Length: 455
Ligand code: PFF
Image (cartoon, rainbow, N blue to C red):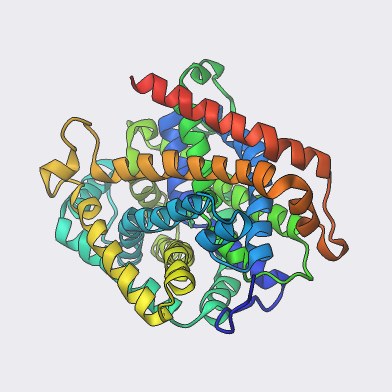
């Protein structure tokens, strides 16, 4: 439980909230959420998603912060310290792998967002919806360009990480997050007032409950909730290890959940009204390209659209960067804490490995057939990564974390940490019930039903 001298500390509670929100808010909110709503049945997905956020993820978020702060270690060390001699450190190990695995595909999408800063700002991507769609297909079909952009994202992330916890992460987030929120609000106001926006709003807001018969709605909503909040892989735990004991965990966790969820919901208020207002376009069948095909249409008709488009994708790229930083931080801090590596060596080694694994996701969008449609699975490599890490590894990690907190560490000890120094903590009995029973049981049911549906 020692604090090594090289470990940084957040400058304040706001610093922690902004950095954790910087991790949480990213492609998951603006790319992932609308894509999943589109594929998963509209408003019915949104309802399940919100239930997962508040009943499953929010309690786990508080638990992860408490684990990190208690031990002042990264995930493997945290679990090992609180349950010496057992195998619980493997939960942390799964998180280390998930950090690298998610970053490998995340960097590809982030690379696309970076390229779209240029494409929208210079007016390269305009025209009819068909033309915009074709542009996206040709761009992502060029595997070399996608791979180069992904490597650029990984390299930039590594460079920021070498700057240290506080200077690197806090400063970027503090400056740009409010701007992103303002721009999203402005675009949402524009989107909902477009002619034909009503159909999009109906799809997004009035649930078709018959969709709930499909277990994949639950699987993808649960996976998306974990992914969006950076939970289930020790990322928030690692950030919690830099969190001061003077500050309250519950209030911070609620802020992060509220911010992240509002931004995802806001993104839906842009994508669906715009998507449904485009004649002949079906936003429910466009997969990972949804935002890259819908948003340029919005910017094309907007006065000053090139400026708005460029700014939007720039802010999205920065939001993605604060998330990639946190993804890389998990395996890096593991190598520093557990293997005694220098930070520079750890950053170099992990970034190198992730770069290799990013290649198949970059080549899997038309460039190379086996990665575009993985034999025997019929989906692309990038989708396979989303399914494996987001919809499987993160919920498994979250379920085991909840079991660990409820049964091994113990709710009493966890509550002691959560309420340290008289911190505000609402409804401790409800939290204890959710973390000990509802979180593990609900996640296990969804995972088992998913596996059963695959047989
Ligand atoms: N939460 C990030 C997003 O929504 O884009 C992605 C992410 C970051 C997931 C960090 C997991 C993580 F540990």
